[in-house]
Length: 355
Image (cartoon, rainbow, N blue to C red):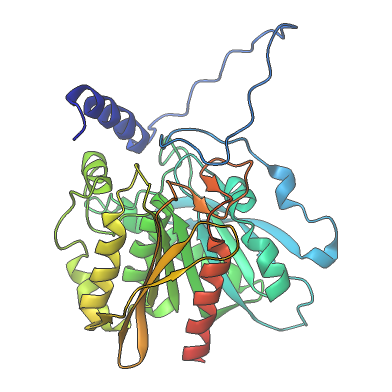
């Protein structure tokens, strides 16, 4: 149990990261260059647990070395609820008029689209496998730390952001993405937002992947989100309107680290149980999988009538980080199983099932 002083500190810091900025931030004062200034140390492979550490922007990572590696497009999704930027990767070799599957990737707190590109490298897999990748980006004016407001459904802000993500998906379809083959994944707050999006628009997706996230509906405020991260959310996490559409929910993949001290691993089980109970699915015997020298993982499938409703991937040695991510990035653990490959393999199976 956390000491009172530590809990107050965490509450204050987390709450400040969840309160949106109402006015533009003040311009930073210019500092004079100093010959004695020391360079900042490189980011560690697996970041500490603070959801407010900032990784350096990597704009160069978004620029392919040649046209043969694919094409990047920038854009903005606009609705009555606001506007959000996005980056879209279209794979090489696409024939005129050909539609390709779409993978939507939602970053975590204190990340942006560029950070998530560099960490997950999903676009590199997309270039080889022939699918498009959409990276929506949270606005710092909507949340000071760049967190998606998945928890803020009481006043409709979370739902408005879900609608903005859907608008970005519609725009991606204008560039050749197939609207009948769409999957969504996210890390931490991005994972929780991904789950919220599919429970509101279940017919638009074939699969959803939550990496180190909290089930939607477990919080209604910043403080509630903090409580939910530690596993003290509602016992019935999903919203009433979502329960009515449970039969149409897309298949769920949950990836979570057993050493995660930011989002307790119990949230992973809560998410798959919600999906499984809604569909009447039962867990199959868990199996241990290890690839090379990477961290081993425990995989459990939840099935009903021969269909996989949810899959839980538990990685005991993984903290709050993208499994198999780039070593130079925050919130990345290169020693973990490759989450990008795990997610795409899961998504492919769902596309094949609905074809």
